[in-house]
Length: 187
Image (tube, rainbow, N blue to C red; front, side):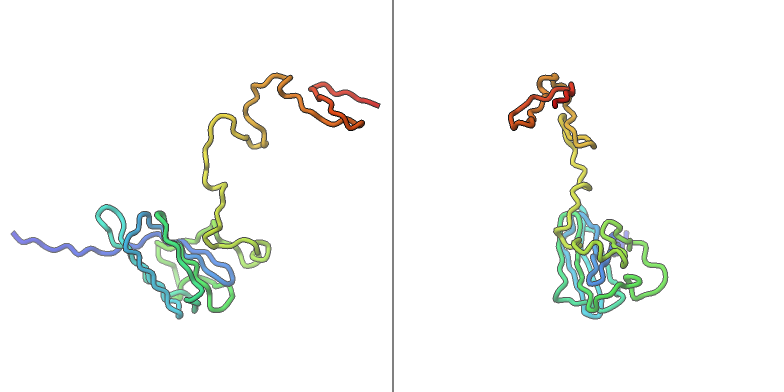
């Protein structure tokens, strides 16, 4: 019996990207990545390789970015969910596309609409930064229990009696006055 050796082909992980006039954000979606290797060259050559999964499946990306980049001012962050690379552009301008190659982009490359800002909207969002501190807490979907605040900002717990719901307010003479559900007009 003859055994054939199986060569393992590399797969392409999902890659999302967004841009500002001065930088790109390239996010490689690869949970539990191991042996991560990132290489960025000034001419815009971007290489990524890693393994993931129980069987250490190899993943690889080799792309040519549209224009030159500043390697020294670019930075990366590797988390258990993804690899984020903030790439500083050599020239501060919006790119018409990410890749040097024209035509339809590869199927693994997607626009990151959560971080995308149009060229004409960049000035409005000048305080926004694509960096690693850019967390949108509303997207965390943090579930809570009883007594949560509803959409109106009210406490959901409405079990209190009228006496418990009375508020102390200051009257015209500066003294406290208990407000009830009844409205009084004082002269």
